[in-house]
Length: 338
Image (cartoon, rainbow, N blue to C red):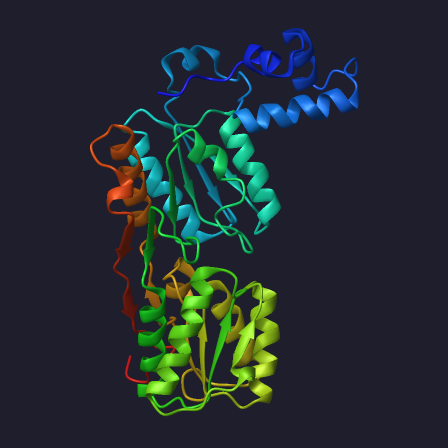
């Protein structure tokens, strides 16, 4: 077990007084900027954490789990968090929840906050542009477990729970083709985000397998907001698309409604599909074909896996990758017969 770094350790390393270290860490103006900078750099290098939970420090546990998500205003993420809480509450753990706002720098700031709040473990879905490395070294250095979910680092074998996004996108695009669509558009998010890159790859592979051409204009990269869906609708109408696959349901619903407003009939003129099986997919007219991405179940799985690691029932690193099942849900937006 690692010994907590104290102000006395930092003071000894720098050959200065503990009181100076304490004042610097509390941004006291009595300490020069040069000295403060030197002390803060040493504190970071040694893995110092501010004494937020002194009583729990003595036990080396806070019974707190941190969770960082790209955005909280997401039906899928709210389902994941609900699933996590259903497990952690029963186990006597509290949650600290923060959002990166799709900003890698904000994610690093969140990581520092989680570290200083002495979380026992961390659940993370990466921000756009995050490599899953920057900011995480302080956790690895102190052997604080980090489990990625939904969005995991590209090219790294780290503990993570995801779905097979590429295969799911292949199946839903294949379905649109089977329903007669030949000029299909894919509205997606930033390709630095693993899930969107994988879904775009599945989309392209389905076109290739069916002998259909792919042109760059068929991949519409957006922020997947409702406004982005409405803007994309005008582009699709101009290119005479007859099929649309969108990387989330809320953007898909906005795009579909805008195309209906422009006079297109769904699915007669344009066949539609989304992703996630959010509540809106069931309530829109016509109901939206989508991929069921079980957020609540994912939340339960990631919480149980992390808690089992903390209680030493298993080592997350011995079987780091878990791929959950997803399911194609066919509804009337793509199928005349429903």
